[in-house]
Every structure is written in C-alpha cells, then in structure tokens.
Length: 335
Ligand code: F6P
Image (cartoon, rainbow, N blue to C red; front, side, top):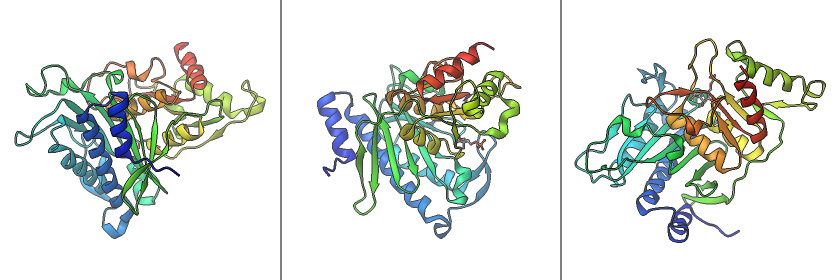
C-alpha cells in the first residue's frame, strides 16, 4: 500500500490545489501532533492517573474531567508559539485566549472541544477532539482580537476536523476539498491516509438519538422517530436500527463511515435550549458531513447558516443522510 502521510497530503494540497496557505498547513499539523499526545494520554488511563473528575466546573457548569483539562492545555500550549494564530477558544475556557505578546501572531482563529464525550473516558469508550478553523476578520493581527471576531457562521470555516480515540486513533479532516481520513501508525508516530475521499453512504436505515429525552422532543422529532421504530409495519416500510455512543465524535464517525442520521435536537419545552455547542461541535461536524455528501440542519436551517451570538452557544443538531435530514427538517418546519 502506498503510504501518504498527513504532512505529504498537506504539502500537496498547498502546492497543487493552492487551497492551503502555509500558515493553515502549520496549524493543522500542530493540532494533529497535539492529538497524538492526547491519544497517548487517553490510552494510559488509570496508569497515567488521567481518569476521574476534578473539583472544577467549566463555563457551562459541567464538572471537568482530568482529561478535559489536560487536553485543553496540550492544544493551547502546542498552538501558542507557532505564529499562525491570532487567538483560540475552547469548550473548557470561559472566553477567548489571545496569543501572548511574546509570540508572533497570525491570522487564524482556532476553536476546539479538547475531549468530546468525556463521560465515556472512565468506562473506556471512544472519545475525541473536535476543531474548527476560521480566518480572523480584516485588521487582525494588526489589532487585538475580540470574542466577536469568532462569531462567524460555519460557512466561513476554512478547515475542520476531529480525532477519535477508539480502537484506532483516527484523524478526519476537511479543508473544503472533500473529507480525508488518517490513521495513526503508533510505531512510527505518523498519520497515514486511510481514506482519500470519505463519502457518506446514503439510504442506510440507522438513527442515533438519546431516546431517554423523548419527553423533550418536538412533535416533529417524535413523529420521525416513531415512524422509524414502527419499521416495516409503519409508513417507512423498512426496519431501522438504533445506535447511541454518547460521544458526538464516535456517533458522527460511524455515520460518516456507515451512513444514517444523528440527532441532538432542540428541547421544545424551553425554546432555544439544546445540548451541543455551535462553534466547536456542530459547525465543524456540519462542514465535514456536508463535504462527505450529507446534510446538517438545526431542525430548520443548515447549521452552517446559523448566526452565532455567543462563543458557547448551543444548537439543535440533525445531521447525516441527506434524504433523512430533509424528511425530518420538513416535519420540523410544519410545526
Ligand atoms: O459534548 C456533549 C456530548 O458529550 C456529545 O459528545 C454527545 O453526543 C452528547 O453530549 C451525549 O449526551 P447524553 O449524555 O445525553 O447521551
């Protein structure tokens, strides 16, 4: 098998496609390198004393796991000194982190969820890191970056990806020219391309939703799920399967590879209430899913067209198989 490393892929994208400026290439390489270190920490588990929770809470009032904090610091330290970023933001930090004056500054903004699905860590199930890259508005790095500079629609993303720490450690990436998958070869420490054109299979009968939240779904979501649970006896005329990993990275990875639909919809009892974060969870995953031939909406409009109002804003998420997303979104609009 011809082995194409991440470095080679990025250099070729820079050279041939001209879609990848040098600073963005550096940024992606640095994030990928940090993900290798996170993968190492995750795999040590109890032996590395990385399991369990801390006494602290993040800005969303969630108890922080030790690995949330370790991974957050690893990504922050790895990205501070390279000269490619103006600032970064993370699920684990209340506000943005500007690149300190002792380092050169660049024109990119990085957002990340250092450990997604962290409830899975202590029980040895897959977790991951999600990241999104935006270009800072005009004038940066000549002026100080503000939180508002990050509040750009998902369509403005120039790169997005995730690393999944599962039986294999895998990096899935887009720079707007399709979706690429790299598997970590631990013996040589390199990311090797294992899928050069990740395309989501369509027409698969599988859905992912936390069924215990049924009481808070909208009538549209209830209708959509009930029709599928009815299987061959219902209006769909076919049986559906259900999977729920409680780690968005793992669930989206499965959907990218195997097809189906993933949902964490709005809570209809409290308008605007949702679980997943727009800027560093929903937007990057939507970019990947659209690039792989799927669709992603908040139940009404494409997620990447949602106007951001806050760094830690939450949003309903319905993504995956195009026809299924369209069906549910059409039900949603009817209510
Ligand atoms: O970041 C939030 C998250 O952990 C996602 O990765 C996952 O999809 C979801 O929450 C799990 O939610 P629940 O605890 O309701 O299963």
